[in-house]
Length: 239
Image 1 (cartoon, rainbow, N blue to C red):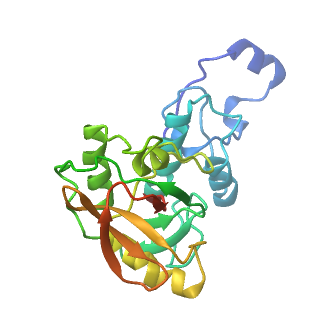
Image 2: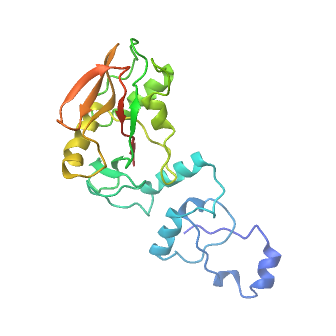
Image 3: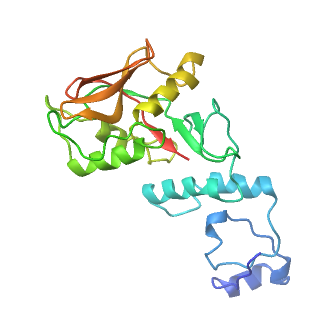
C-alpha cells in the first residue's frame, strides 16, 4: 500500500483527532490513490472499497466524459466484476459476448434502442466501415464519425443518436457490426433478453456505397438495405 503525507488541513486534523495519524482509517475509491491527501494505514474491506469505487457520485468532481472513463476503468482494477453471457452488464445493458477467459471483459447491448433512423451517407462509400466481425463495430463507428454523414431525408442518423446515448454514467456506446448483431440475436433475443423488437436493426457495416447491412430480429437473417431507410439501431459498448 502506498503511503502519503497529510497535505490538507493538517492543523484542523490534529485538533479534531489528537491521536496519531497512524490510528486513522480512510476509505476512498481506487481511482484516487494518486491523490496525495491522506496517509493510508489499512487496506479497506473489499466490499466497502468496491462499493465506494462503483458509486463515486457526489464524492468526485468529474465531468461526464471523465466519469465515463473512470467507471470503465474499474474493470481493469481490483474491483473488476465477473460476467457471463446474459448477465446485466456494467452499464445496465445485457452481456452478449465475453472476450476473455475470466469474464471481466466483453460486450453489452443497451436496454434501449432507437427507431426511424437512417444509416447516413446515402450513395457515398464510407471507407473503413467494412468490418463484419465481432469487435469491428467500434472501428466502423469511428470511421463513420470522420465522414460526418448526413440524413437523406432530414433528421439525425443512427451513429449520431448512439453517440449521444447515456446510461448510468457510461457514454462510450457505438453501433454494432453485422456479426455483433447476429450474436445478440442468438445469445439474447431468442431467449427474450435485451428488449429487442422483431424488426430490422442497422449494423455499422457497410455493404457498398448505397447499401449497408441490417439484421432482421424477426427472421434472424441479415440483409442489405439502402442507407436512407429508416429502421432501428441498438447501442452497444465494450467493457
